[in-house]
Length: 422
Image (tube, rainbow, N blue to C red; front, side):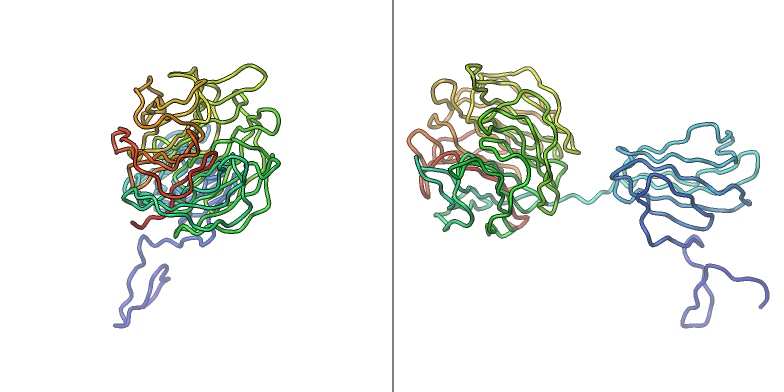
C-alpha cells in the first residue's frame, strides 16, 4: 500500500475504514466572540453569552470541508457570522454579510473553486429538541399567623393533595417569594424576619428545604418570584421601606445573582408566574405614599430581561397570588382591592392578561400559588383570618370551590413547583 491514509481507523478484521465525514472534531467548545477555523475540522459553537464571528481559512482546495454546530441552541439569540477571509462564499465576495440565526442549526460547508468558493452542503436545524419533563409537585412554605415568623412547609402531591406541616428549616419569615429553578427544584428568598432579608433557601427535587444561604441583592419584603427560560428563576420588585424595581436572576443551579437595575414601576405585594413555557410575568401590586393598588404588568423574556410597564387589565389589587397553569399560561387571582377579593385574570401563552373572571372560593389576600401535576395549579392559605383552605385550578384555568385546609393556617407565605417525578 502506498500514499497517505488520513482520518481512518483499523477494524479488528484488519480492514481500514474511513471515519464519518473524514473530520476531526475539536474537543473544546468555542465560547469566544471570534474563532479561526481550519479545513477538515468540526466545531461546537456556543453563543449563549455572545455572538461569534467564524473566520474561514484564507486559502482552500476543492473538497475542503468544515462543520459548525449550534452547541446550546442559541444561534437565534446570538448569531454566528461567517468571515470568508478573502474567498467567495456561495459565489459572493467576502464583503457580503453571511449570518446564521436559527436555534439548533448545523452548518456543513465545502470549498468548490475560486468562482463559487465555500458552499453549504447542509444548513439543517435539529428540530427534535429534548423536552424537559413537567413539574409535578409543589411546596408552600414560611408565612405568619399574625405576629410570628414561621419556617414550616407543606408539600403538595401531583394530584393536588396538600400534606400536613413539615417542621421548618431556615430562618422563619414572611412576605417572601418562591420560584421553581432547574425544572425540578425550588427556591424561597427574601422576606421579613423582623427586618428585611435577602436570605434564600433551596428546595431539593424531593421537597427537602435546605438551611439558609447568605443573602444576595437588596434585602426586601413582598417581591415576586417566577421561573423563566425553562430552568432559571427571577425575583423582582418588593420594598425595603420604599418600593423598588430591582431584580435578581437565579441560575439553573440555584445561585442568586446580584441586583439588576429595575425596570417598570417600583412596587410590592405583586404576583409573578411563568407563561409561554420560557417567559414570566409580574403583575398588580401596591405603591405606598398614597398611590395605592396597581394592575400594571411587566413581561420577562426567556433570557430574564424585564420589560417596561404594560397598561393594566382587570381590577387593581395587591397581595395577589399567581401561578402557571396548562404548561404555557398563567393566572392571577384573589388579593385585596380595598377589601378581600376572589377575582381572577387569565394570562394567555403570549402574555396577554384577560379581563376579570368572577371569583370562586373564599375571598382573601396574601396567599400563595403554584403549579402541580404538570398542567394544573392551586391557590392556598391566605388572610381571611389565616385560613388553610385551597382552591384547585384545572388545565383550562378554571378555579374550583374551597377544599378544606390542611396544615397551619397562615398568610404572607410563598409557593413553587418541584420534582419531575409524580
